[in-house]
Image 1 (tube, rainbow, N blue to C red):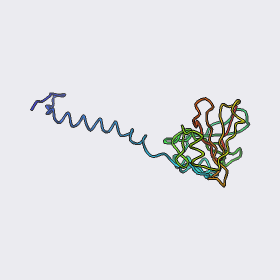
Image 2: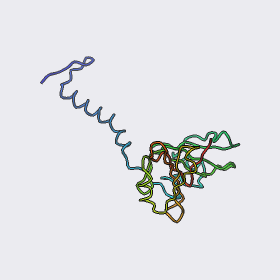
Image 3: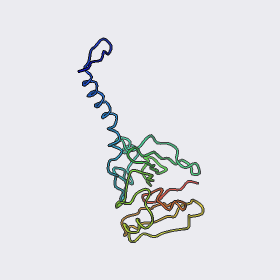
Length: 178
């Protein structure tokens, strides 16, 4: 059995290998949380973020970041980033208390198994009443797929006109600021 001298301590090599394996396992642990199952999108919201909730409620639960200015084109708007594992933002009402009016998801959640990267075909398979709207193709580069309330909820998918894959999901709509 070989030994090594570390800072005036003699340690068997087998112990060093075991300690190294534990250190590597503890560093690799966050990768498991990244592969956690996606959160669920419904017509009411995403995960614990629901329409109508106040910023204070969401902040106390650790679901959103600090409130910040919203769209530059509108006066007195506010928004906040969704915290991991979700990616996206929450838009609030103009008056206090600030309540959630829309949620924009860019990752970390799925609606009936359909998430970011899905094609229109997959959206229509999960939501048969989906309506495809090409009116924003030229302006925003997104084809909108609207899910009506009687078709599974007020959800909107933004499918890129270049990649033909879902780039953004909005509950109840995708808030554009351009």
